[in-house]
Length: 74
View (tube, helix red, strand yellow):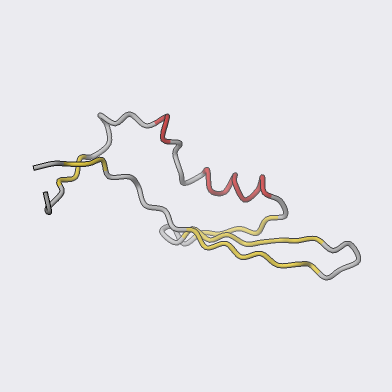
């Protein structure tokens, strides 16, 4: 029976729009569905900062501490 490492699941919904004011610029809103939290953002840095709250970089994860999930098909 083989097994693989189960990665945490995160689902984000991102919406972009143009602000139609004197200085046209884009804005956005991001929602993290699992936690039902969200925020608006004005630049990519704010967008990425929100995502980083929920996503741990793969290189910082120790595979030995992650749960092992068996593969029922194989």
